[in-house]
Structure formats: C-alpha cells, structure tokens
Image 1 (cartoon, rainbow, N blue to C red):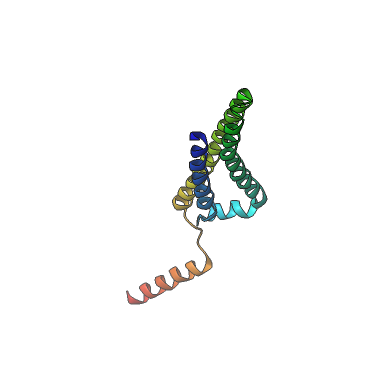
Image 2: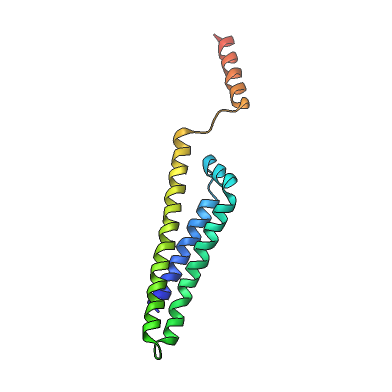
Length: 130
C-alpha cells in the first residue's frame, strides 16, 4: 500500500512537471516544443502511463501475496524501480525547463524591427530637444 501511495505522489509530481514544461513562456522552450513535438509527446505519455502502472502493480501484488509471494515481491520491486526511473526522467525535464527559462532571461529576446523603430524615434526626439 505504501508503494502505491508513493506512486500516486510521484504521479502528482510528474503531471505538475509536464504541465510546467508545456506552459513555459520561454522562447527557447517554445522552439524545443515546435521542433521536437512528437518526441516530447511520446516522452510524457510514457512517463505518465508507466507512473500510473506503478501505482496499480503494488495493488495486484497484494492480491497475489497469499499464493505467490515470490511473484508478488518481484512485481513490487519492478514497480519501485520503474517509478524511480520515470520520476528521475521527469525531474530531468524539470531541470531542463528551468535551465532554458533562466537562459532565456539571461540572453534575452532578440530585438524586432518594431523595437528598433521605437529606439530610433526616441533618439530622434531626444536629438531635437537638445
């Protein structure tokens, strides 16, 4: 039961991290989503699906405990290892998303033509007042 509860908590963390990466306003994260949309979708579906499975497997092993203790233990260990692997992957994506957001803030957005026109107009108006 404890492993199933832990898997449920991992599922909450995984869905939070997934939504954080997809809702990122970072320019570079948007580029990553545009270029690698299919790979990212498969990655997150895999993480969420397997985390759900790791919440159900311990319940199945509980039902098998009285008749097949060895199989039940193997199922629980498999669920624990898979949960740790998928949680590790999602934490990696959280670190990646936070790194990309920090890089976007540090590097800054490139100037557009509209930005350059505003600066030119401001420069022109300052030159006329002097």
